[in-house]
Amino acid sequence: MIKNRTVFIQKYIYYITLLLYIMVTIGGWFGVSADTTRIKINKLSREQEITGWGTSGCWWAQELGKCDSAEEVTKLIFSPDGLGLNIYRYNIGGGERDNPDSRLNPDSSRSTESFLVWDEEAGEWVYDWNKDAAAQKVLEMALSYGCVDTVVMFANSPHYSMCVSGQASGGLEPAQSNLKKDCYDDYVDYFLDITQHFIDMGVPVKYISPINEPQWDWGGGWVGQEGCHYEIDEAIELIRMFALEIKERNMPVKLSVLESGQVGDHAMDCMDLLWADEDIRDVLGTYAYHSYWTDRNFLLKEAFGEYLDIQYPDVELEMSEWCELPCQHTIDDIDGAILMARTIGEDVSLTGVNSWSSWVAVNEGGEYADSMIAVGDTYNEYTIAKRYYAMAHYTKFVPVGSHAVDFDLSVADITAEKAWWKQWIDDKEYDVYLTENYMTVSAFRTPEKDFVVVIVNEGEEKEVSFNMLGYDMSVYTTDAERDLELTAQTKAHKKITVGAKSITTVVFR
Image 1: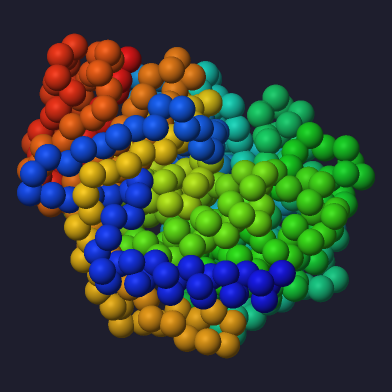
Image 2: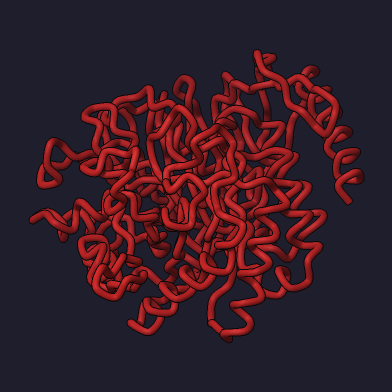
């Protein structure tokens, strides 16, 4: 199967690259023209269902939960009056905050508490469900607002006591597989015990994700957070053990795996191996990946989406983690918001994801925080970033149960530039072509039968028309001066002006 996939991807990239060079229309994604750009929505199409929008609680929740601002900030993210996110990814920490030999700064927000603690009197490891209290408080508040229906329990690393290095922050050498071979069973039990505890508390845990970005080195000379490297065969072996134990315990959860750090060969190979195992296949809930380092690699994203759609059409696809890397835009820079909105649109329209989650909702970092909400020296001081509104252009208008729909653009003016790096497919090397797309479009139909079009315009002001006669139209805009502002409402013509460097959501009712 992997060999067949390689042939498919090779041919796909070749033909798409050829099309880019001769600048023909690539249906249904982006378009630019000095004149009016026409977006023709296929009202009868029905693409992937949107199952949610989310974020992770790393690592801000364990700090925010101690502060007076906790309720205000949590409402901004999870309440109907805020973003209304329905997916909450709860981090099961590896315990570096309690590790006496930790290489991480114990005061760092990236050092976590663990529910597994050493009982000196008993001389054994026991669970203390009072640990991670601040993060549990944020989760409780998030659930109270009524939007969150899906909690994913995930871990960046096993507990430090199970790691070869004695560190949940990675191996002592780069790319060192850090989970002890004799601790695979221990890790499965530990993770599922914690998951069961949250289920017993009434938390709507639907998925577990015990491995995060296994291909990265983690550790070595750089120790910045918790993380664990696995070779692919080790990761598959461990996931199979999780699958068997989930079935043995008859737990009402499914796997959300394997959280590869970017689109590419690793993500495709992992999917092939996971699906080939019947026990894993039985409890595979979503295939999760991260959208890092591919912000302008249109070819790779579309090839990845086409491959999964052809080979695994029934598998739910989840983009479970993204933020701007490296973060080069300030929190009030419209370009940072455009980058995030474009990435969401790419992942929906090109890769075909069912759900999309940001990596970090709240973060430190001053004016260059990579989050949707930035905090100062204390979490009681916070600023809503432009990225927050980029997310809102989708979450406020495309509810759970919506479907992506197909559409055509009248023109496509695409600039392709060869990147300085190469893309490896098995043992062959290929050029990577990055596109300078000035308009990114995604379209949806909601459960209420409304049509929603999100336009991310990176270029100059443009006229855009739609084939939506008979519908009322509302237009919402975010740009350098406006934040999700209602800028037009009409029953007449279906033509709008999309401002330069803007995000526009058009709702047809």
